[in-house]
Amino acid sequence: MQKIGNYNIIKRIARGGMGEVFLGVDTRNNEKVAVKVLRKLTDSARKRFLQEVSAQSRLHHENIVRILNVGVYEAEEEYGKVVKNLYIAMEYIEGDNLAKIVADRQVQEKHALKITRAIAHALKYIHENRIIHRDIKPSNILIDSHSRKVKLTDFGIAKILGEHGMTITGQSFGTPHYIAPEQINDAKNVEASADMYSLGSILYLLLAGKPPYSGTSTMQILMSKVQGALPRSIESYCPNLAPRTVEILSKLMSIDAANRYQNAQAVIQDIDTHLPSVAGNSTRYDPSPASDTPSGEFTVGTIAAAAPPVSETMIREHTPASGLKLKSAPNVVTSVRKNSVDRLEKIEKKVDQLEEKLLAHFQSLDAKLERIIRRLGG
Image (cartoon, rainbow, N blue to C red; front, top):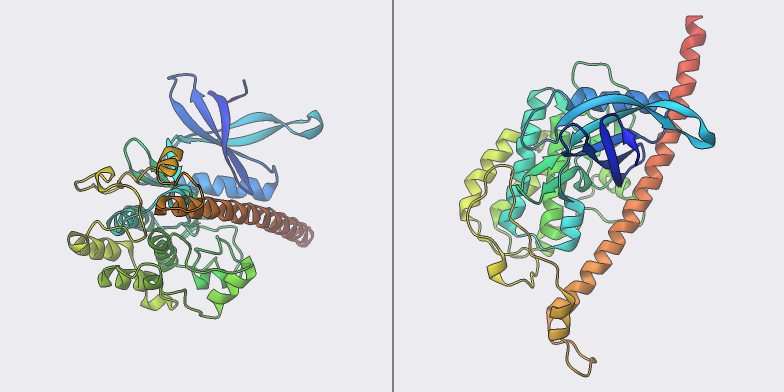
């Protein structure tokens, strides 16, 4: 069994362009932890890793994944070479990220607003601590299956106001589907309103079941935003939404940053005022019985338990003996869900490939810049 610091590694649970995350067990207290390590041991990657530690370690909030420990361990590279690598030990969230939840289940309007409010609480706290996240996306939002708390993670490209970061003016960082238009042109100088736009994109995803912009390529999505194109109307997916929900979403996702919510507290206040009047109806078709939806209010940082996926038994019960026709919508929903999961997996794979190419490109530029600086200094 591999060991990193005080943690026995059980299995890998996530992988991105820069790092990998493993499930580990702390040998001192036998508690589960998430251990994140670098995949590429370059100076640029190390600097960004330490930037993530610097940002996230100063944050202590119920809607943000906590860092427990940071350290160095010996890692074996290809060809048997042993090198020093960095790791971050974080609280382990047993549950799913928002991308998988949206692909697998139906989200009610009220629950979508409550999830959005929980993320807004996290953003309010990090903005008050002079940090801009810059990468609010479904895979960075975790849902604890036990406490049902919403947890924000991955501060790898966060901007710490007042500190010298690695991002160059004019450089773009973030995930195309969810970043604000101004972040595409200049990630270095974005403000809190950029995170507000990303929050709106998450609310759109929760309501519609798909991101705001569609396109055959990443570049097409980016160009649509840069050119000021509006996403498809949310009412075309969810005709029964409360008008106030549409207004909140529209203000979050305004193309003009000046017309957006300027801080998360205003979002929280508007959602809190609006929630009592929102019915618990699903924004999209939900085949689960009403009794499966828990009743009662949920505190900040919690969500409603989502309906379970349609089982094979349910499919058989709703399929006629001839097998030629379907009498029930769950079959259709299952097919749609499977197709959605397949598409999301393909998109995530393409995004990972693009992130690796971009990382390699920026690492090359960083290396060239460092050589130029050394020459000038010499």
